Image (cartoon, rainbow, N blue to C red; front, side):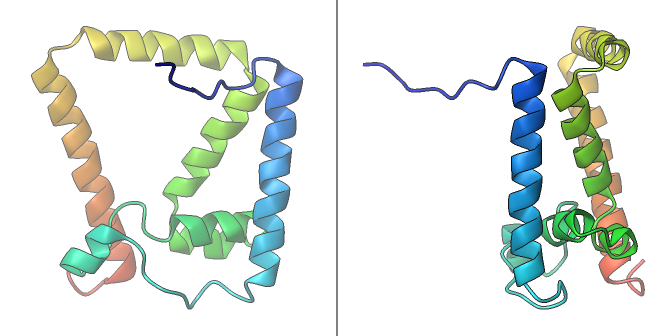
Length: 140
């Protein structure tokens, strides 16, 4: 049995084209949405606990970035700026940064599993606390 797998574009031109098409689709959807304040809560963590996860507000933030409303995007979820930067770096494949990130990833992978899990868990907890503070400033 063969499993179909998607392959990512390999040329710089195709990666940039894919990124531009995605941006245009997100921009058009955002312009038709008539605002970013209302909408259903679809985050399972927020539905179960009542507290936002680090990704809450990410889709609305991405929509705000796509139409140029950076202040609103920052207030909805500042982590999306890192995600956008990562996608741009992936698309243009800027080699000095790619080499640095590969070196950092190799160093991280050389650490023990305990250090890896503890590092990721600590980053998640810090991002979660920032999300809770962003949405409910009176809690912390």
